[in-house]
Image (tube, rainbow, N blue to C red; front, top):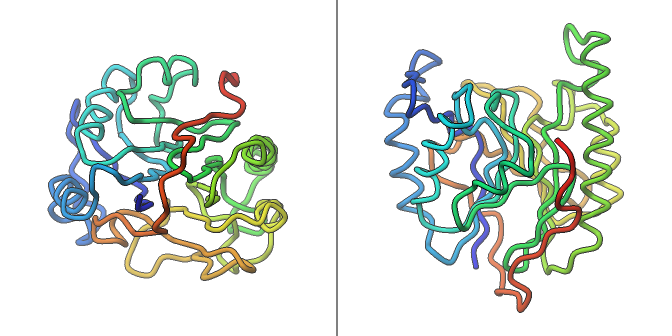
Length: 246
């Protein structure tokens, strides 16, 4: 089984939103996203999608995009991004996700030998314009990551990966409570997206012995990034902490 990651699909089937207004890196979206996925991913693979999945405001509209994702090759693990306003309670989401798709929120999932944990994250202390409200949200995300990592520790798997939507540092790449938690957990890899543009800032090249992967869709030219190749596990799917509140 190959493990891939790609963040920021920014799909919008219900109310189309052209992404090329955000720069030339988005030309050809969303067709380029679907084409890149189909060229890269096989049916036996697993793809992590850490946030900004759909521009939809309502869950019913986002389901159109989730069904489009479900039709692509491979199995998928989803994480909420800052633009995923449609994201309902985790119990409702899990009850309606298409087959072969899982969501991580305050917990962790093991699929085919990969143990996946994570949280959305937020702008980190020391960022330009960081406010008291940012601190409140950031503190909450730190606790959510702590909880997710604790659940991940209960799952068996040959490869451990943490998903964030936001980078775990500020633009100066200063350590944070998020990086401290990740370093203590000693996962094999960290993936995140969120940052766009020709010269994105805050892109951590490495974190101790943790392999770090920046996987924003436009930065990858819409081809999911290979994170690891894994043997399939005898325990195919497991969830620790399922049923957590929204």
